[in-house]
Image (cartoon, rainbow, N blue to C red; front, side):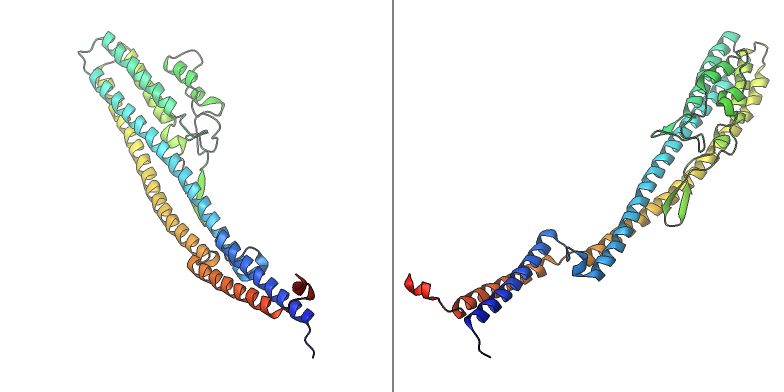
Length: 311
């Protein structure tokens, strides 16, 4: 077969074009930091990349859920601590008032402070985490306590009842759990049931105490009898906080595991998709050397034309 100048030129251009494509591919890898730019370059890597990215996004979502659950529980524990302190103060005041040497005017002052503490407890029942009420079960868009109705109830206003302070629905019952999925197949309850913390027993017992302080005929023994009710309320709060603490501890363990999982998932994804920078740089240098040699060889192989001699 006769080899012509045209054949040499076309072959040279073909290989040079292929060399340029190789250089472009390696440069894109170096710039992007990824092995492939299109799925067609390596379908296996692309499919694995989709799976790994899905896993990373899933872990990220679980970590956001854990963060929101932690915020909810922290707010719950903080308010329960305030309620506990308020109940302790009410107990201290009740112990003082139970002293028969206290006059009615002194007890009136104590009653005023007790009523303020009761209202404070009512306001804590309407605490929020973000824009959600945390003590009204699944009715996170509604406050648990009607504060004006609570004041009327304490002041024995006409028509004021225990049921009225909870709004139209009356005292809370089992109003539903709020659960977050914190890991695949694992959900955790983040709220406290309102009937166990701010149920009718709490406000009914505190209202009875307030009424005894207002009655001038109340004896010290009657007030001392209320200490048992306050102790029961305090113990219930301790029990609820203990349960909440146990859940918070488990949530922390889940978060630690998710952190480890996230690191592992991102490492695997990186191993699948990311380039070895040093290796790619060496490959680029090698292709550049070959490309320059091809250009030089092509310039020598392709014979000059008549026009080159006429210059």
